[in-house]
Amino acid sequence: MNRQAPLIPPEHDDAGWRALGRQLTEHAQPDASTDSWPALAAQLPPRTATRSTPARRSRQLWLGAVAAALALMVGGQLHEPPPRPIDPAAEVLLREAQALEREFSGAYRLLSQTPQPDEIRSALQQLEREGQAIHAALEQQPGSQRLFDQLRRTHELRLRLLLRGSELAA
Image 1 (cartoon, rainbow, N blue to C red):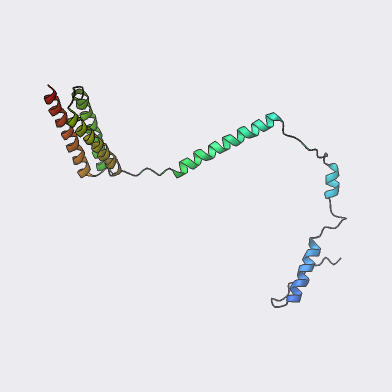
Image 2: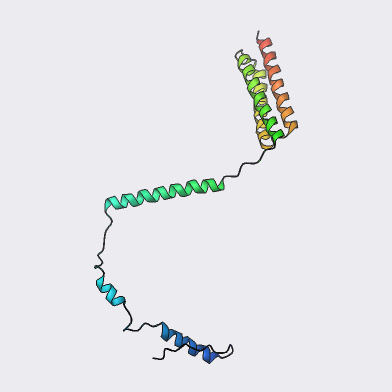
């Protein structure tokens, strides 16, 4: 067998490239005299078909469940939108809106204990839904002075309506 390094043929010599391929294939085939795998295989312990024990199976299931849970947790964190930066003026406005909600909610609790006529009760429910919608919009656009003013007007109207209902009920 010829073990010298093959010469690279010119680019346009197809027959030369085929011959080079045959030479490289010959070099890639192991010699029976230098192949050490049969000697190594004889030294290895014999392979036996092993069956999973119940403890091993339950451990594999448990590890699979843990891996799936971790994948879901990491995947959930990757798809969570990053928090939007809020400018300081918008943050102040948002805090004022939350303080306004707290102040008016105390007054609502006091005045809503008195029975209200049906037409006032339905108007109050409508104003409450509008206030919630405005507050949600204000959280989306925290710097909107217009939304803040609208929320304040809605709360004031709701409070006046509660007072009016209390007067009518008395």
